[in-house]
Amino acid sequence: MSYDSTNVFAKILKGDLPCHKVYEDETALVMMDIFPQSRGHVLVIPKAASRNLLDADPATLSALMPLVQRVAKAVQAATSADGIRLAQFNEAPAGQTVFHLHLHVIPAYEGQSLGAHGGGKADDAELAGLAKDIAARL
Image 1: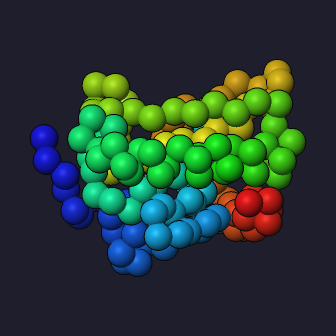
Image 2 (image 1 turned 90 degrees about the horizontal axis):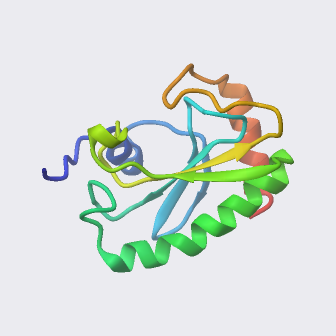
């Protein structure tokens, strides 16, 4: 399958759709997941067009992982999470729903189950506040 430049993340990267931005540089955008699995769930999205890990340029992946680590530490500090889960899906049978490479940084809290992937939409005011709190720790 090929990359579809009209996917929702491509539209966000172009500025055609809004997001709760946490961080952005020349390589990637970090934003709040509007359908979070837990409080503080963020997405790290490379700006380079790739459908998923399977067709990504290795240079993109190499640049992305240090940022993912920084974001995970910032999320944990901002949310007081007990742990951090990373998730990345490749193609629909594996659970991918947006076909632009992205990594989920999902806080885990002792005694709390994660919500369903793509479950209910979060409150925009809460997402905006979390975005600021996480950004302040990057």
